[in-house]
Each structure stands twice: as C-alpha cells, then as structure tokens.
Length: 128
Image 1: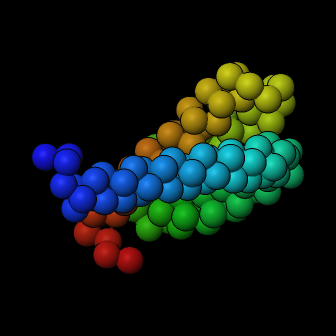
Image 2 (image 1 turned 180 degrees about the vertical axis):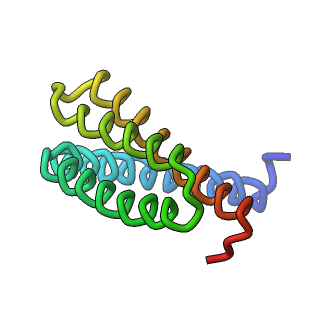
C-alpha cells in the first residue's frame, strides 16, 4: 500500500500536518503560559481583592437591603452580611489556601443570600 506514490505523498502530508500541529501546540503553550504567568501578579494584586470586596459590599447592600424593604425577610440580609464579613476576613490572611477557602465560603454565602432574596420575593408575590 505504501509503495504507491499517492500513498507516500499522503503519508508525507500527514506527517507535515502533525509536525505543524506539534509546532503550533508548543508555541501556543509557551505563549499561553507566559501570558498567564505575566498576568498572575495582576490577579493576585491586593487592589483587585479590595475593589472586588468593595463592589460586593455595595451591590450586596443595595440588593439585599432593597429585598428586606420589599419582603421583610431578614434571613437573606443576615446570610449575605455574614458572607461579606467572611470575604472581608480573607483580606486579613496571607495569600494561599486560607484566603481561597475564606473567599469561596464568603462568596457562596453571598450567592445563597441573593437566592434567598429571590425566593422571598417569589413567596410574597413581589415581581419587582
């Protein structure tokens, strides 16, 4: 089968294609890893965490506070407040596992609080 010129050409083209894919993979990997490592300091910068927490507090206070005024359910506000406090405590520990655990726990509590807020709205018939 490989004796025919047509099959040898196909095999050579396949090999060239695989070589090209290998080269693209190698270059893309280096570029992607380089970009991620270059941007890593940006994502780990304390200002990112501080601004993110400030936005979470602002948006959480507005949304959960408005929900409390609409449906008078205190539990979503308390849950969200605890979540925001846990998120804030993540700023006080060194970068690493502790910070990640506190952040994920806090964010989860805030998300649950917003879901509770939505549920309380639907139970009171508020389509605000």
